Structure formats: structure tokens, C-alpha cells
Image: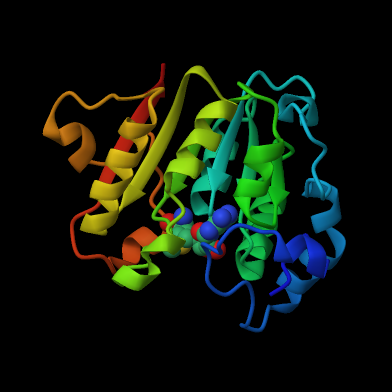
Length: 236
Ligand SMILES: C[S@@+](CC[C@H](N)C(=O)[O-])C[C@H]1O[C@@H](n2cnc3c(N)ncnc32)[C@H](O)[C@@H]1O
């Protein structure tokens, strides 16, 4: 299925296994459609992204770049960007309605420090310069709960390696889920990757939302089979 960033059949054929569900479907409000028509080109990263692009060059005067993968409705992305206006934010989300919501958030909050990638984040990770991202957020990724679907989960060894490559030493990755098997799998994957150190020192460090967490829409649905876990990893 085409995404907003690519409809080239050759490019789509070579893609890794798909980790996201639908990218469209629901009718957009007139405002959402207008934002997509008039604002997306202003804030999106041009596709394809040049190999070796340093994302810090996308923001004038930005000291650091934070990346959110699968921002859904954009609640976390927009809130963090509004609080940290000196930081550059890149949000990845192939779901069209989510992109439209993020554009509304950018407009409502007069943000200039957000760039959007309306496509698979793994394409960006492969293109970005090494050690160029300060923080990454993967919050409540698609759970793919059935055993035969689990190969579609975003957090896999290849993904962890790609993420580690673009994070700066001392940088941070945050993973949250409310699906027990994904929590276990992600922890093993990040720690098995090498280069990631789990920062938790007590159970409350992963059982309670971090103080700077912003509640997401998917999180409030409580669709999983366990209480949410928050894993913060430091890059070593
Ligand atoms: C379950 S939703 C959660 C959204 C949001 N983080 C929240 O907590 O409300 C997961 C989102 O990740 C997106 N996603 C899945 N695979 C992705 C990928 N490879 N690159 C970027 N986004 C992806 C999906 O489109 C979906 O909107």
C-alpha cells in the first residue's frame, strides 16, 4: 500500500516487512484535509532522505534532535516540542490522520521545531548520519499480539542496531508498551543488542511513567494485557 512519502512500486517492493496497520481510511475533517494540502510540504522531510543526512542541519540553531517513531495522534510529539522549543523534533508516522493531527498541533502551538516523516521510520534510521539523535521515543508501538504476527513488531534486533547507530553516546531511547510479551521481547532485544544500558534501578523506575512522559491516546485505551511499562535505555 502506498504511503504519503512513496508510491513508487519498485521502492515499495524492496521495503522491510511492514510494522504498521492501515495508513488511511477514515474521512478527514475539512481542516485536516486543508492542513495536509497546504502545510505538509512545509514541515515534511523530503523523500527520499539523502544518505548520511545529519538531522541537526534541518533546524536552525537546534542543539539536539529528538525522534518519535509512530507518534499516532501526535499528543506526545506536540507537547514535548512545545516544552522544548530549543530542541528539534522529528516525528515519524505513516497514518494519514495522525499526520494531520500533528499538523494541527504544530499550527495551534506555533511550533517551528518539528519535522514530519509520513512513512516508515526505518527508512530514516538507515539514512541518517551516525550519532546524530539525542533521544528516541517508541511509545506503545503496534502490539501484533498473535504469535504469527509478531514478526511485524517494530522492535527487532535490526531495528535496535539501526537505532543505536543514530543515537549519540549518552543518548536515550524510551520504549513503552502494555503488552507483556512485547515488554519482555523489547527488553531482551535492546539489552542483547549491546550499546544500550537499562537505566532502571528500582521497579518503580519502569512501572511508573517517567516524570517527563506525556500520556498518549493509545495508552489511554488500555488495550494490552498488562499495566504499562516504561523502559529508558542510555547509549553506552
Ligand atoms: C499503536 S499505535 C500508538 C501510537 C502512539 N504512539 C500512541 O501511543 O498513541 C502505533 C503507531 O506506530 C505507527 N508505526 C508502526 N510502524 C511504524 C514504522 N515502521 N515507522 C513509523 N511509524 C510506525 C503506526 O502507524 C501507529 O500509528
